[in-house]
Length: 83
Image (cartoon, rainbow, N blue to C red; front, side, top):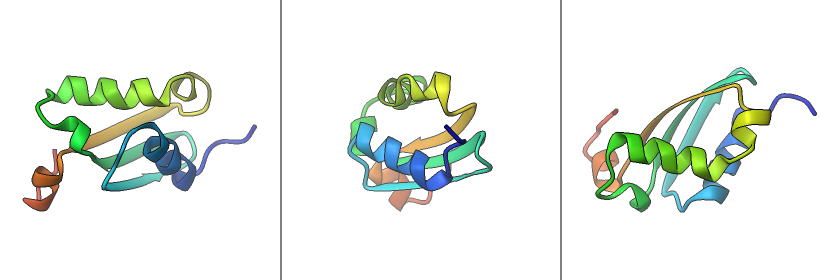
């Protein structure tokens, strides 16, 4: 299996949790994602990251070498927050 594309990683994230916006950049091994979801409401930054990693499951061990992310609520995203 080849390295995933940013589009595939975005799809994996969108399948794992309800997102209003997902944007992923990367080179096939290292990715950076901006993820906007109502599921992040009331969660700490660490819990938000854990929620994404939980959703990606085995893909984080087998396909995705590194994932940096900015997990935002819709209100934070609308306000222009970047993490």
